[in-house]
Image 1 (cartoon, rainbow, N blue to C red):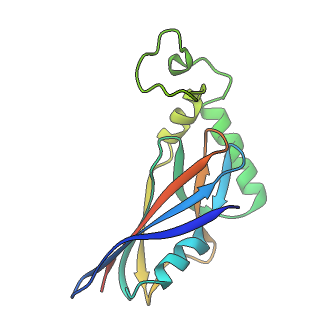
Image 2: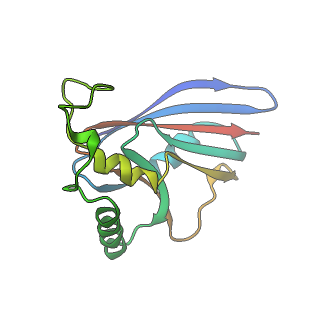
Length: 161
């Protein structure tokens, strides 16, 4: 997995903040990419002992969710996403003969990915305790690729003392 963490902003004083951009390459869709360790690494580079960290996808076809990293459960979640918005269903968004907005040169039919994203979310917010994200024993943070393999950016923003 290609990845890079880039610090883009910090502040100091009684309340501190730090913002990182995590650059990732997905390899398939759907893909549940566990980014928990990368979030922890970003937090280890700032001196926030107590506060909040927000993990935010900068994309409308890639979500951020907390769940368990268990292979059979991930298979179940992939089937669930396909059930609620099948890739081969009919989407007006995919009809390039009538669609006229937000088109790019490399546009592909991805109405299913946008619809799947509706039941997920763009971000998660997690308490920071003793400088670490406070996660339960089985909780992991996922970037969920819904569209196709590509470059993705995730913002990690921590605030606290």
